[in-house]
Amino acid sequence: MLPEPWRAAFLPVPRELFIPEVIWREDGDDLVPLRRSEQPAEWLAQVYGLRYVITQVDNGAPAGSAGRGRMATSSASRPDIVALIGYRVQSVQKQRRPSAASVRRAGAGGSVIKFTV
Image (cartoon, rainbow, N blue to C red; front, side, top):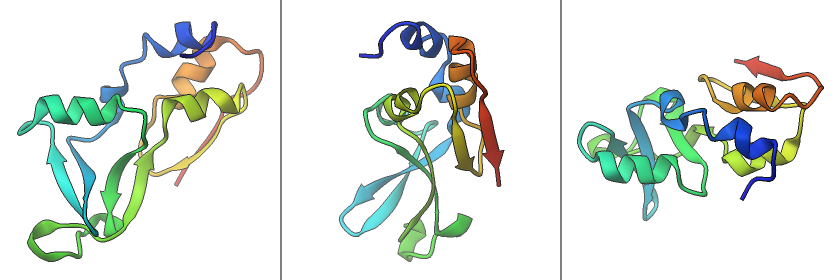
């Protein structure tokens, strides 16, 4: 559980707004797509789980057979890790993330630094 004021900052920010329609989950040595439109309950469970969320594989072009991925190339950080970083966030990610919005909302008095590649 996040301590205050982090809890108050993170709870109002819906994580699913920052996660793409297709995420990826491990299946043996492969990564398989999980589409929100096809499996909404499992998709939400992954998004709000305690692990990072794989948002891209193989630099955007799945290299495995039948649309499977081989290597994660982008992910959404775990919310608890973002909170532990504190008021200075350095996020090197390709897609939008709720981390900077949540940390800024906490009003920690420091800078929020976000790098987008």
